[in-house]
Amino acid sequence: MIDILIGIAVADALGVPVEFQSREELDANPVKDMRGYGTYNQPVGTWSDDSSLAFCLADSLSNGYNLRDIANKFQAWYQEALWTPHGEVFDIGNATRAAINRLIADPNLPPNLAGGTGEYDNGNGSLMRILPLLVYTKTLDNADQRYRVIQEVSSITHAHFRSFMSCFIYMEIALAALTEKDKHQAYQNGLKSFNQFLSNKRFNGREIALFRQVLSGEIHKLDRSQIRGSGYVLHSLEASLWCWLNTDNYKDAALLAVNLGEDTDTTAAITGGLAALTYGLEGIPSEWIDQLAQKEAIFELGRRFEETT
Image (cartoon, rainbow, N blue to C red):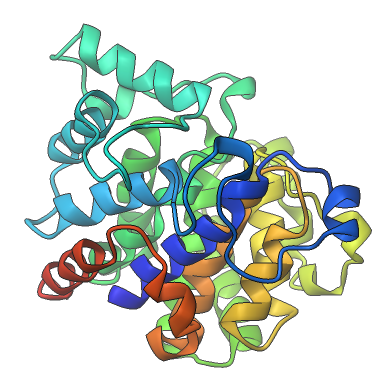
């Protein structure tokens, strides 16, 4: 699954220099190619915490599924700059920082109890890094097992229902995209699987109702003005699916996501992973891949990661 890792990182790097810019600013000066510096004053091809934590997850999964080891990798990123592009952590979400600090303060804390559980803990920090888990969840027998694992991994940093349910819906669609290359059909198949899972559950109806635009099966029909690129997990889920479904290649999907504005790197990273599943490594512009920081290390991680599939 090298394509997933590269797909996340390339799109992430496209968004890093313009993170926090408004849609109006980007409409006036849209991202069309890799840029350097900007928001964080980082060289061209620099990816952020989105990719770092996805790489930490993949690194851990290359040795099997172990929740404690995943959490340890996240701590090593935060404290020792593991899987950073230039040896430093320059971007971290508040909820992720708080969760990792809880793990540091209490080494005996179960990792899935570290994430925030409040309504205001629903940033996109688990959704942005969840896709490499597909290498493990695709081997599980049913949606109940996949849900349990996805909930655990999300909850290391984001333990509210809204966050891990966003991850689960995204991953059910991604799972469908592994075997169904028509992305619109994959979207429908993923929703069918989710609805079957939901049919015998007693989840909070008000929470489920928040996903109505995604679960309608028609998210791609919304106007761009109805899609937000903010750091709120529901906005990120909606935006990534909208960008993926409304384009027919990786490049356009990633650029559409970046140019939504606001949390540009994360919206793009979540979109980029799905687009890479659909179009493969060969669908990602080679000139963008060549500019990635730590490119060879990412490919080596991808090769180790693929050995587990």
